[in-house]
Amino acid sequence: MSEQIIIRQATKADLPGAVEALVDAFKKDPVMSRALGGQMRIRRLRALFTFQIEHHFAQEEYGIIDVAVDDQGTVLGAALWESPERKNDLMKDLHSARGYAKALKLGLARAALVEVGLLRARPVFTHWYLYCVGVHGSARGKGVGGALLEYRCQQLGEYPAYLEASNYDAAALYRRHGFIEMGGFGKLSNAVLGMWRPSPVSAIDKNRGKR
Image 1 (cartoon, rainbow, N blue to C red):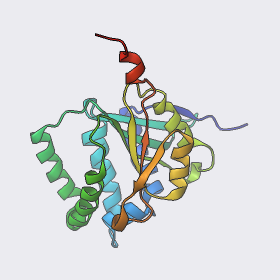
Image 2: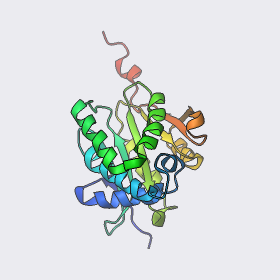
Image 3: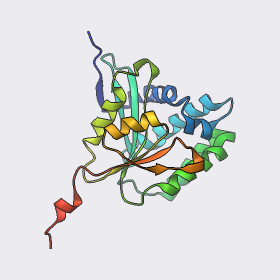
């Protein structure tokens, strides 16, 4: 009997499993390795995902966490989406800076340089931002990553979506789900591509003819 895979928004009980799935998925990722490198890379990666999930993506006003679970409720993979309606908040941003410093310690400067390079190229248009999607090694090859993508891409509404693919295999998966290659990031990493998915709801068709 094939294992049932359920895609849904994460509950609080899913969060530790989401962290572990993402750590396993990104422990050899070229961008994460460059940002968090060194002997403490895995520990920093776990601290980073834990902080981001608990203090950012799990907050309704910030974003959404989607998870893939099996019929026993074990988290097989997760996707972290930043909402297009997220509002900038100076105090929260300052708190985040302290939180990142605590999580990354000596790896903060390296991670900040990589993040600044990515932020400079991010589109200015209002959009969903897919921070990451990852599948635990024990569940790879079962279509989990694609199912996570398809679940949220069907719910984008009037907004487009943007992401950075950290390797070409991931980029090929994103392309199959409607993302268009925009270009690379040069010295930051030859394997990183910015990718864009148009809004499912056309603003032109919706507003054409209105006075």
